Image: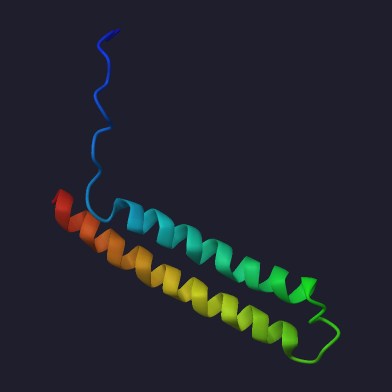
Length: 79
């Protein structure tokens, strides 16, 4: 067991956090779009819920793009 104090966290490879945040955005954004649409009463209006969901899907698609670019940076930094 190492009793020496840690002097700061070990830095992560470039692109790691970009990949993590992009993946989280890709998963959460469509759910948030559906939740936002249903909480504003868009279910009663025609096509309004679909618009909210479409916006969530577009933002989720941008999250996938961010995660992909981050994964490329991460891959190139570690290989």
